[in-house]
Amino acid sequence: MATKNVLVVGGAGGVGSAVVNLLVNRGCKVVTTVLSPQEAASIEERYGGSVQCHIVDLSDAEAARTKIKAIVSSMEYLNAVAVCAALAPCGPMELTALSTYLRAYEINCVSGVAIYQAAMPALRQTGGRIVLLGSMGGRMAFTFMSAYIATKFALEGLCDVMRREAAPQGVKVSLVQPGGIRTNMVHQQLLDVRRDMAALDAKDRNLYGYLYEGYLRLAERGLGEGASTAEQVAEVVLEALEAEAPESRYVAGADAKHLLGSIGAMSDADIDRLFNEMFSG
Image 1 (spheres, rainbow, N blue to C red):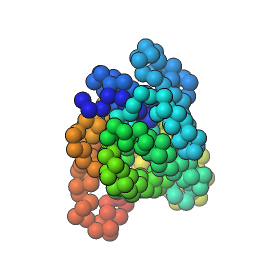
Image 2 (image 1 turned 135 degrees about the horizontal axis):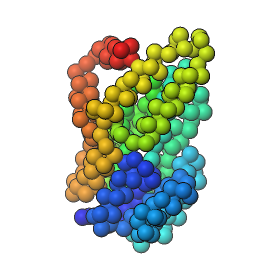
Image 3 (image 1 turned 90 degrees about the vertical axis):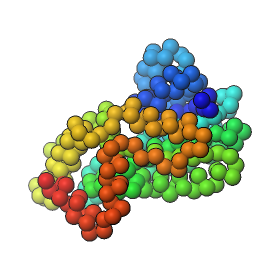
């Protein structure tokens, strides 16, 4: 395997945790970042100290860049970085706080730039690579998820620029675009949506109640039918980390492949109609 020393950003849960596990099983030396001491303790217990763990809060990208630089400097060398952390807020655009957009951009986009800036000097030395976790939501604008969708669309453009600027220096950049994933984060989303729906006043419930209900219905159905496991998405991340000539984009999951394949032949009006029908039931 070409990637020996790997930094996994967001290795405590979901896809990030599955990526850490796959890399450890491949014999890689893995360094990861998490958000809390509790998450760090869990990784320490699972791997017995063989995975080095650092606490990094991506909601402050400037501070995160400083910490990532220090982490990379402490490593003998760096072959690859996998960026798996993200925030996925839900809600109607009119009712979503502007602070939610700002925080989502900081974690999902600006921190990606910070990680890129911090890691590039070391990756140049090894001809390494960066793999970032995007979403099919970066190419298809899902109703009720405007803050998340905006950041994933932005990440698409950022990764294109990263890839083009890094390639002449021997560093490869790939973006993985999963569909639905069965993780604890999604289950927490469902709890949050139910809580927010219960707090709606009569006016907002009349305007947007159907969106909350539609999201819950679609998300619960997706968890049971089309969603991938974290391990399945992690396998695609690993493919991007291992490939001699990695692709610029990898679509992960049957639902993502189906939906992204379908919209290519649809007009905006057709796509609008599709989402209206999905959320209206």
